[in-house]
Image (tube, rainbow, N blue to C red; front, top):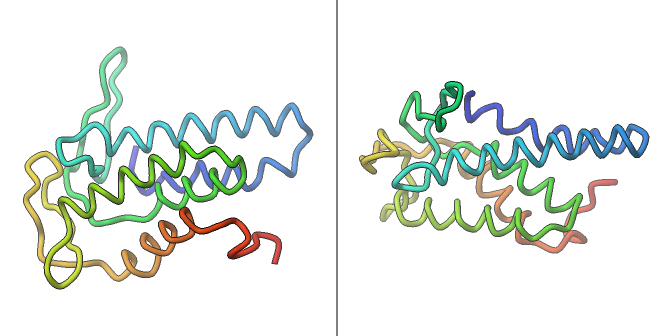
Length: 153
């Protein structure tokens, strides 16, 4: 599973309200479970930053496939939507954990950089534009009051 797919929990959570209560709850449960998986992509490495993709082999723990991290926004985006839709502060806690890992492992004097390897913490020399445009935006919204930006407007 690619970390890029971690936008799906947020997408499911946003769409769940379009169904009846029973189906909506099934969709929200799936969104929560997928968000937990995406959060654990981060928690499973020594740097607490997710690799690009993971393999799941029956009966075993997930394993990092491609071990770089380029500061992607997808997991943070889903955490922000899930927090806004459920009010569950767990999603803020998870987002804070990820932010702290960015601060510890990716922060440099001139900004932030990705990691060539999430297991060793070896840095690359580039900050992707989407880190500012999306990752930090979703982190900001994750810790802003829900009234700051309405989902209905």
